[in-house]
Amino acid sequence: MKQIMMISFMFLLGFSLQGQQKDLELAKYYYQQGEYEKSSQLFKKLSDKANGYNEYYYNQYIESLMAMEEYDTALNDIKATLKKKPSIVELYVTYGNLLERQGKVADAEVQFNLAIEKLGPDRRRISNLGNSFTRLTKYDLALKAFEKGEGLLGNEGTFAYYVAELYRRKNDTEQMIHYYLQSPLAVIERISSVQNYFSRFLAVGEDYNILRKKLYEKVQEDTDNLFYPEMIEWVFIKNKEYGKALRQARALDRRLEENGARIYSLAQIAGNDKDYDTAIKAYQYILDEKDQGSGYYIDSKRALLNTKRKKIIVNADYTKQDLIDLKTEYIGFLDEMGRGKNTAFIMLELAQLEGLYLNDLDGAISTLNDLVELPGANNYVRANAKIDLGDYYLMQGEVWESTLLYSQVDKEFKEDFLGEKARFKNAKLSYYTGDFEWAQEQFDILKSATTKLISNDAIDLSVFIMDNANLDTTYLPMQMYAEAELYLFQNRVDEAFAKFDSIGTLFPDHTLQDDVLFAKAENYESRKMYTEAAELYRTIIEQYPEDIRADNSVYALAVLSEEQLNDPEEAQKLFEKIFIDYSDSTFSVDARKRYRSLRGDDIQ
Image (cartoon, rainbow, N blue to C red; front, top):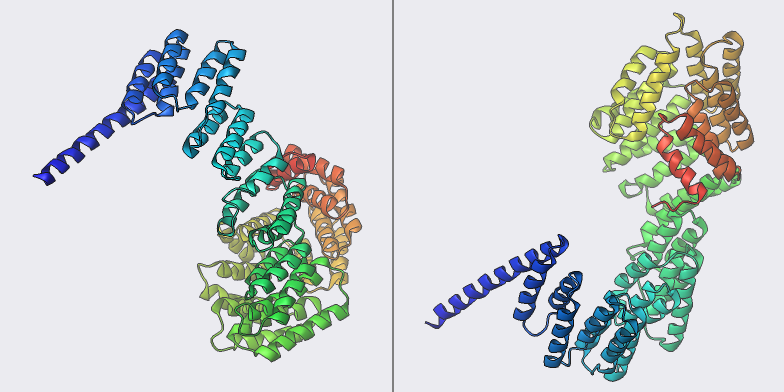
C-alpha cells in the first residue's frame, strides 16, 4: 500500500512540475510579446506557488505591473510581501527599483540602503542581495552589500569572486585582479579556470603586468602556496617573455622534483613563437638535469637539434662553420642513439642539412639511402626520404632516378597527401624536361588535390602552360624558361639567369617577360636580396599590370615591405591595391585581413 501511495505521489509531483514549466514558458512568451496583463497573472501564480520566495518569479510579476504602469498595485504588493517576509532584503531592492522607475530617486536610495542595513549573517541572503543590485547595474551598492556581508560572516574573501566580477564590470582592472586572487577559486586545483578567466578579461601587456605585480605580493605573503609561482610563469608566457618564464619554470621543476614536462612544454611554445634561444636553453636544461630514463630526455635531444637547425636556417645569418658544427651535432646524436627506426627522422633532417644548405648532395643521398633501407622505419618517414632523395638526384641531373622514386611514393600513397606531393613533383619534372602536354594533364588532375598548396600550385602551372606553350609550334621560349627554372632548382643561379636573359633577347615580345622577372625576384628574395627583389616586383606592377604575375607581384611586394623592408605604409597601400584592383585574386581575402591589421583594426 505504501509503495502504491509513493508511486501516486511521484506521479502527481511530476504532473505538477510539468504544469509549472508550461506556465513559466507561457509567462515568458507573453512578457516578450508585450502582453503584460497575461504575464503578470502567470508570474503571480508561479510566485504564489513557489516554495518560500522565488525572486525571479516575483520580480517578473512586478516588472509586468510596471510595464502596465500599475504602480500602486505593485507598491501595495511589495509592502504586503515585505510585511510577511521581512528577512528577504532583496524586496527592498525591488521596492527601490519601483520608486526609481517613477522618478523618485531619493526615495529609491532610501530603500536600497535599507536593504543593506537590514542584511543579516546569512550567506545565501547576502549573495542574493548582491546579485539583485548587480542585475540593476548598481555595482557600488552591490559592493557595499558584499563588504557588509563579509563583515557579518567574519570571513574575509568569502565573496571575493563576486567582488572581482563587479570591478571587472566597472573596468577597474587592478581591483578586479586583487579580489580575484583572494577568491576561493584561486587555488592550485583550479588554476586552469583562473587562467581561462584572465585570458578572457585581461589585455596582453599592461593588464598582465598588474597581475604579475599582485602575484609577487602574494608570493611574499604565502611562500608555500604553489598557485602564485605557477601563475607567474603563466603570465610571462602570455606576455611572450619566454626567458623569464623559463627561469620560473626551472625553479618550479627543481622545487617539485618534476620530470621535465613543464620545461619541455615551455620549450615547444617558445620554439613555435621563434624564440629559439629560450627553446634551446630549455631543452638543454632537460639534458643537463634529467637522466636518460626521463620521458622527455630523448624527445628533448631531438627537439634541440631541430630548434638549432631552425634558428640557423630561419634567421639566415649563419656561416658555413655554423652549418658544419650543426652537422657534427647531428652525427654525434646518431652515433650515441644509433641509426634505426627511432632516429630515422633525425637522419632525414641531417640529409636536408647536407643537401640544401651544405650543398653536399652525395652526403645527403648516402644518408637517405641508408634511411630507406632501415628495417622497421616508419613508412611516412621512408616516403619523405624517397621524395627528398628524388629531389637530390634531380639536382644532380639524374632524371630517371628521380621519377622512379616519385612514382614509388605515388603508388604506395595513392590517396594520401604524400602521393599527391610525389605526383606533383613527377609532373613538375616532366615540365622541366619539356613534356608540357603530359605535365599539364597531371596538373589538371591535381587541381582537386586535398592539399590547398598543391592544388593552387597545380592550377598556376596548368594556366601558365596553357597561356605560354601554345603561342607557337616550336615551344622554344617555354622550353628555355622551364630549363632556367630547373637550373634554379639545381642551384645553378648564374646559368638560370643567363637563360632567362636569352628569352628577353630572342623573344622580346613573348608573354613570358613578366614570368621571367617574377622568377628572378623570387630567387633574389630566397637569397635575402630584398632590395633587388622589390625592384623587380615594382617593374612587373608598372610594366605588366594586366598580366598573370601582376597580382602575385603586388602581394609579394606588400609582404616584403611589411616583413623585411620595414615600410608598413607602403605595405598597407599595396594590400589595399590587391582587393580593389585585383578583387578576383586568390590573395584578396588575406590582403584585406593584413590591410586591416596594419590599419590598426581589432581583428578576431
